[in-house]
Length: 319
Image 1 (spheres, rainbow, N blue to C red):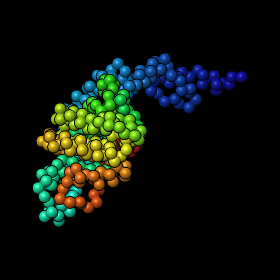
Image 2: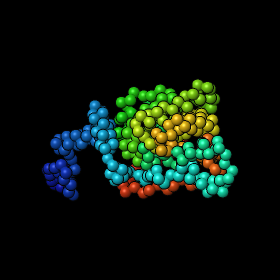
Image 3: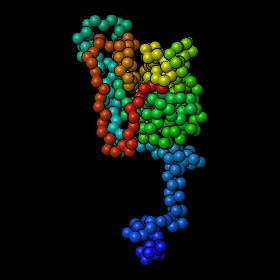
């Protein structure tokens, strides 16, 4: 049985688009309102997943960002950052002990020690580094994955995967470059490491060395003066940690010996304790200073002024 109140309620016209339903009204949507919602939903979807407009969106954003000054870009940062000036070189880390052992150097030692000004060991999140380029340990699709790959994609935002789709993947040992988008780093160099699964062959070693060579080649071609490498292939790809570190240090040293004036800093960015201990032990063998230094600590990030929209996991283990 319909009461008078029910009849009055049903007789009341629905609120117009944007109005708030009053007590006794049924909050329904008119065809016009539904149409507006559908248009808004489509617009939102095209922003995050622009479909046919994908190239235009990322190209415009890339062009805009690459024209900005550092101070302009800092106003748009979504997370804290670590500037290059706060990351000590390997020589600076070893400075205290080096001064006390100054008399023990020899000619060969002195010839090589200059390269210790060109490298750093940093333990922490690679996505907070405010440098020219960070390297992504990517998979062959370049569309994101686990470990450091997923962390970089989440921090860089949807434009990164949009540009990566235009690159048509990447072969093992090769590298491709994109804009850094929401990252403090200006560029991301994506390289695909070998899948070793715990057993390394000469081909695996060559492919891993090529990851560093091709990344540094791209850096030189794009006038990149500072670059950070994660531990490539040591995560789910199963390349043993210590041999991977030796290949990284050897390859970077050889490249710097021939291109010293082309690069200001190469940062070995590690996340796990096991990798930090390996690099800490090996660095002075490849980039000798005057002696072993005191225990160092990675610098704290500078606080950004923009609130981070979502929690980004710090799962920076190499792909």
